[in-house]
Image 1 (cartoon, one colour):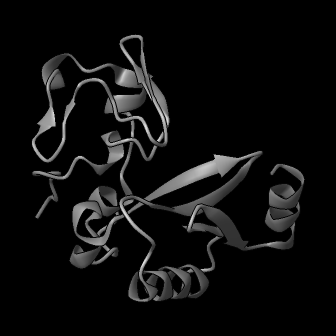
Image 2 (cartoon, rainbow, N blue to C red):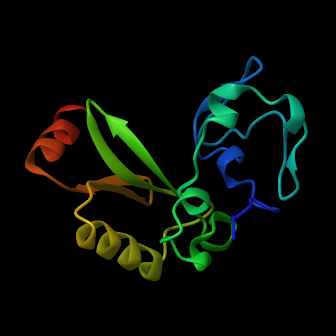
Length: 140
């Protein structure tokens, strides 16, 4: 069964950065076109970048549990790349990440041998290959 956003709008609520039709959104400033908890007001005409191409980890990765849906868990999980290093990323989206969520995320990353980055109270942490850690330390 394919997962759907439903009433979840966390990716547009001002936790991620981007621009939609000339309007910027970033941490602290939601997308101009979002009706929080309802959806995108320009869904049929939303831009390809970043809206159509953005991939929420909860939507695309069936191994991420149902209870980690962003509007339930207040975190956004997605895959990213930095200087050729792929990693799984967790961003706080509406509160401090819970110990249950953080424990699952770190265990998942370690068990699947993934580079991971997570945010707690606005600060970033990471685990991964030696090369990935060097990259993160030099690109703060």
